[in-house]
Each structure stands twice: as structure tokens, then as C-alpha cells.
Amino acid sequence: MVVILAMDTVFSGLSLIIVIGAAVALLMRLIGQPLIIGHILTGIIVGPAVFHVTKSPDTLALFSDLGIALLLFIIGLGLNPQILREVSKTATYVGVIQVGVITALGWVLGLALGLSNTSAAFLGFSLAVSSTIIILKMLSDKREQARLYGKIAISVSLVQDLIAIVLVVVTSAGSSKSLALGSTIALAFKGGLLALAIYWVSDRLFPRYGKLISGSQEFLFLFAIAWGLGSAALFQKIGLSSEICALLACICLAAQPYAQ
Image (tube, rainbow, N blue to C red; front, side, top):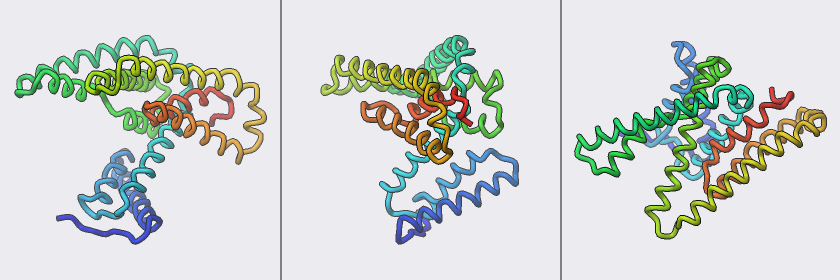
């Protein structure tokens, strides 16, 4: 049975969600469990399955998108690109092999369950890809993102995300008549060009104007959020994942001396 506890205004509904989230997070702290589990439980509690706190799904979706982007933004600030560069070669091999092997095993399992080749392949790939957000959050909570296994896990999850993006684009090109091969190549080109531009700005301009950026704590705060969310919005505009791009943009920012 669904318990309806809808709030009259967006403010009151959001406030109740935050209060419930804090209470569940406190419970997780008391029993020694990761906070990410509490956040997932909070979503179930305040959602349609239990309390159905808000009747404004569009507003709630907006706050959830901002929340994910800001979470990855904060985590990205603690990931120095030099650290990830150390294990990039190993992570690429591990990521590609892991995705390939698990996808193949899932495909065989799907065929055994009576699925078609395409459905079985999607099942296998779904089993192969892990949640980057959950991995980053758990490593960040334990302060182990700088350890060797943490660096490899983060790099592998990013490789998985890149493979997933390529698969989504290729699948869309194959299933939609409106998206031709030329559009797919154009999307990849625009994404690569934008990524290079973000890297160039962070590598060339940020060090030059470091004193100006970090001279005021308030300006630094606004600048950092504008950089993370602005970069994510640009990637979303061309049709790529805004959350992962926010993470990549903030990883570029993490190399600066004022990141922390």
C-alpha cells in the first residue's frame, strides 16, 4: 500500500526529503554502513513506493540532476589527473577485457533464458557496467581514492562509461533513421573538441590566473561551481552525459593548487 504524504509546496517537500535523508544517514552512521546506502533508502522512502512526498516530479528530477552533478563535482576535485594517468594503461586493458568477458557471459546467459541475440547482448553489457557514482562515493567516504586499488577502480569505471557512451551512440545510429552515421561522427567530433578545449583551458589558463581565481573564497566557490556545471551543460547540449562530463571537468580542476 502506498502511503501518500504529499507536501503543498516544493520548498516543504524538499525540506522533508532532506530531513528524512539526514535521519537515514544518521542511522547508517550508527550501524557503520556507507552513506550511499542511506541515500538510496531515502529515495525509496520519499518516492511513490512509500510516502510519495512530492507531486512535482519535474522539480524533483531537476534537483536530482543537480545533486548528482554536484556529487561528482566534489569527488572530481579530489582526483588529481596525474594520479589517474599513472594507471591509465592498466585500467584501459582491465576495463576493456572485463567488459568484453562479462558481456559475453551475459550474452550466453541471455540466450539460455530464451532472449534474442540483441536482448542477450544488452543484458550482458548491463551486467558488465558498474555504477561510477556509487564507486566514487564509497571510495571517497573511505578516503581511499588515492590508493592503488582505488585509482584503478576509478579509472576502470571511467573506461566503462566511455564504452557505454560509444555503445549508446552507435545503437541510436543503428535504430533511428533520423540519426545517420554522419551525425554520430559529428557528435564524437564535437565531444572530443569540447573535451580538448576544457583540458586546454585548465592546463594553460588556470595556472596563469591562479591568484585571481583563488584570491577570494567567495569568487573561488562561484567559479568552481560555474566551471563544473557549465561544462556539464555544454556536454549535455551536444547530447552527451552531463554528470560524467562534470566529473571530467572537475578532474581537470583538481590539478590546481587551490582545488582543496
